[in-house]
Image (cartoon, rainbow, N blue to C red; front, side, top):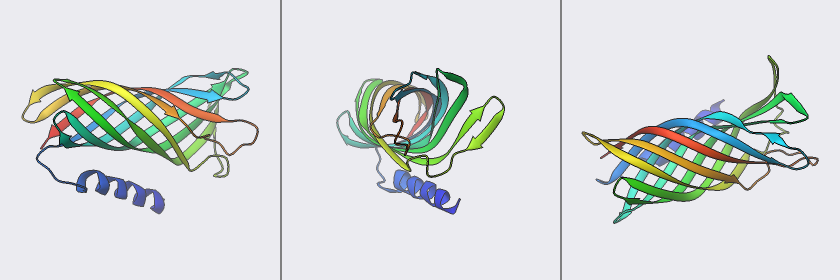
Amino acid sequence: MLKLKSKIALIIILLTGTIYSQNLVIGLSGGINYSIPKITEFEAQKEICPLIKLTSDFYLSKNFYLQLGAGYVQHSYSIDIFPDINLTFNYIDVSLAAKYKYKNFFVIAGSMIDIYINGATHINNYSINFDKTFSESLLYGLFGGIGFELSLGRNFNLLLQSDYTVGLKDATKSDDIEVKFNGINFLAGLNYNF
């Protein structure tokens, strides 16, 4: 558990203490990850999972920002031949992206790294935690999205954002099956402009 706390503290320090600028924007958002697993040999059921994200936008030049992000994301799936068995994977999500803003709208694209926290197999009301040898400890991928910010006054903005993520690394260490997580994210939150 100490390792997890150290990772979270490091991420927060990197997000908020890297650069201080008058054009720094800090955001907190939450929403859903519509998890779309890509699995070899089986048809997987898509699942709706939770997502929380803390972001820091650093001004680069007119309309361009560098965004650092960290948060929690969950991926989950069941296989069509065993619909009562559900596998859930929990990650700390760290992202780096370029953001282009035009008036209240923006587009964003970048890369992400997911650090494995834990996972479990759920069968009806019974759960079994994964052995660490089942899941990869580090995943990576790409994402792109669009969003809208609405000023609420006093430096606060309402944020609405949708992203599509593409997992590039197998989430399991199994030789028999390959699982890559894609997802559609829907986020709502608040940004604060310094």
